[in-house]
Image 1 (cartoon, rainbow, N blue to C red):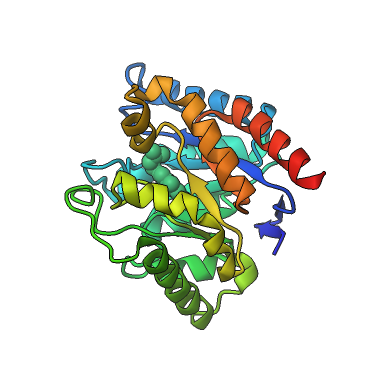
Image 2 (image 1 turned 60 degrees about the horizontal axis):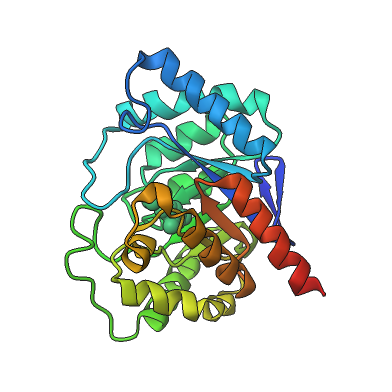
Length: 276
Ligand code: 8Y7
């Protein structure tokens, strides 16, 4: 379970690691045009690798609540030049953050070694496309769709329902030809969840270890921190670090974050304490 083969690049999860977020969307890199956007994204990824990220997650479609959908062509125009530039400049694996089968296939051909799908391969053709690439996949839980998921999230037992959903997706993937050693799961903090649901998932995150595949979490700058502290995204670092530490102490192996340097430090501390 501990070393994933990301198209030839190893991702060693025997200790917890950081996944750096690289958004290549017009809203995150305004002005300056195409070249500037690619250049800035590449530079940012290199900084995150220097800060200790074990993998970089490249996304060309915003999955924030209420976000607008993006066409396959636009998503590819955003991510492919960045993947192409980074595959030669970084030794760590690159992850493609997408739910679209066409983007999965093209991104892995261009050099991505991991697929991060917030839709857990439920889109038409995604299961087959991802399986054909041969790279590991993160299956994330989401209730509803991004445009409406935060309107009225409902569960009887959020922890049991998320685990049950992910167990079902693992089973579907294995039947489609995946090996368990290629799969990672994620409870999907903020994706069709109230603050109470997010807190229950964090409190009982160790329950996810029963799935016997590595657990990834993403909490950095999310609204659950805003709701607890009443602070803007730029002031959510401390909250995100505490949640990352709590998650890792409950067994999470990969932490997806915008704040790579501080998160690497936090995970080193937790790892040292857990090893004592
Ligand atoms: C997550 C994610 C986002 C997450 C995984 C944001 C793409 C929203 N969040 N992928 N993506 N897990 N696996 O605030 O929690 O970064 S986008």
